[in-house]
Amino acid sequence: MLATPAPSPAETRDNKAFDTLLWTLSRPGLPRDLPEQGEGSIITALLDRECLVYAADPLLMPEIMRTGAELADIDKADHVFLGAMATSDPLADIAIGSDCYPDDGATVIIRAGVGSGPALRLTGPGVNGSVTLQLEGLPDGFWKARAARLRYPMGFDLFFVDGSRVVGLPRSTTVEEI
Image 1 (cartoon, rainbow, N blue to C red):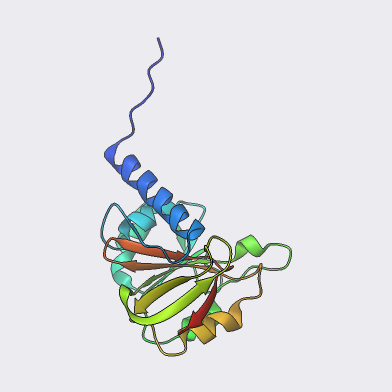
Image 2: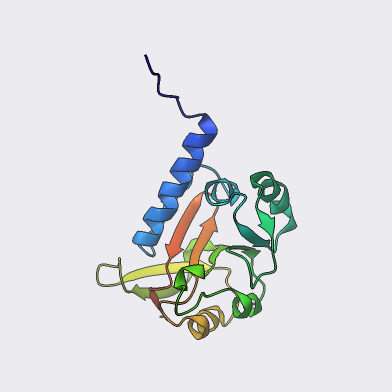
């Protein structure tokens, strides 16, 4: 008789985090809860030994190193953890892929207050008409810097983390400051 292995609590957590991240990218601007506060569950859900990672916050390094992921410069990284941003300058260096391989664009994770701050109107695939989102704690010029880097299908996908809440914005989402 064959027995199906039961997932460990860590596997269950990582699967829930991965499902949450996919859900938020497919429904831009709508927040969802991660299984844990902060970037830890995102790190363990997305990273493995085949990933190149850049982290601006040194406090994330122990968790990143446990995944076996390789550290890289920001322009080579598959996953970019920017923490709380003081300036939009790092956006100019993030990998956006190429015409032949747009999927080489990075996944970027940023800490921001979800539900307060300046209002944004989101439109595009996955958005029913438009969605209004408020994000607090982003540096001046953030959305202009993002728009300057996107040449769809090339670009980078964004996750904004606020405690255990996360919001996803794929590169296909148009953002208008209102």
